[in-house]
Amino acid sequence: MTSRKPLGRYRRVVIKIGSALLVDRKAGLKKAWLDAMCADISGLKARGIDVLVVSSGAIALGRSVLDLPSGALKLEESQAAAAVGQIALARAWSESLSHGEIVAGQILLTLGDTEERRRYLNARATINQLLKIGAVPIINENDTVATSEIRYGDNDRLAARVATMTGADLLILLSDIDGLYTAPPHLDPNATFLETISEITPEIEAMAGGAASELSRGGMRTKIDAGKIATASGCAMIIASGKTDSPLSAIESGARSSWFAPSGTPVTARKTWIAGQLQPAGELHVDDGAVTALGAGKSLLPAGVRSVTGLFSRGDTVAIIGPAGREIARGLVSYDAEDARRIAGRKSAEIEAILGYPGRAAMVHRDDMVMTAQVGSKSERQKKDASYA
Image 1 (cartoon, rainbow, N blue to C red):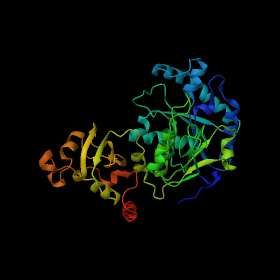
Image 2: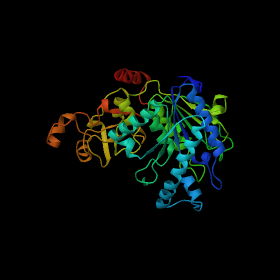
Image 3: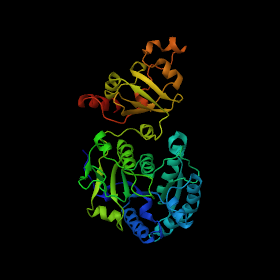
Image 4: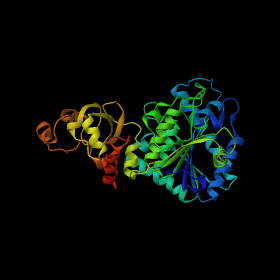
């Protein structure tokens, strides 16, 4: 397993900052905390490290400026709060970073900007250019136009997508909790802290809880989801508390935090995009034989598919679900949903007779697929790794 390194030994770091760290419900922006955070960022930049910030807080700051009541907001209220708060948030970051003679660049993303391949590449090019000229991109979801159906819903997964998009080797999630516990510590006093997570297993996923405050949309669940996206691409992840001033300095000084090891066999850039898709267009439910075959690095054939759900088109990303109901892979499907249903469970040699055209032998080809969970024996996984080398 890759061992934990000091922050100064990473090349490119993405830092996600939760709303509750930046904004006080009554007082508004926590300027002293932000200034200390920017001093930390300046320290990393001075050591030649690229830094990107995924900053929550637009809605929280906007509702403070507009003096909106506490509790859940209607969609249009959230969008209005974001419109007001984003201006104030960008100005605050720009002013605080300028103390270290650092230029800030604002990037607002929607879900489609990372889910659609061309827009993903365009966003990546813009961010990389900002890094090239020495600026610090300040990234947030474009909450003024996002709706509940087409949004990330949390900045943890957005930060993971940014980390994989830009080839970062470390993702730091700063929040109001100092790491991963076996159970939510505010509910279970016997919860055990986990300092190192070598692999995100179903047991690790089961430990995730919900959001901890009204200013936060994410919880440990979304942080684990972020970890799966980031580590699969070879990016390590740290969950740490941001409640203290200068939280990055605190991490370097040994403050408690949870470290997630990057995958030893990171996927290619294209497969990173596939694995990080937040909203697969459909699901292919497969049998045990297919699970074994996929674990050995083979393509998914129609014969191994037991059922098909969702409305999708050829080339869309679908989730591949094992008999236990757990996602084991994601990939670009070779057929529209209707045709996929017609050939599910049938041999590849029968495809032409059923559909009236030859089609592809594989429902999802291994070159268009990423395993999102380890399956099969150790020897089978080694064969799979060798086949992708």
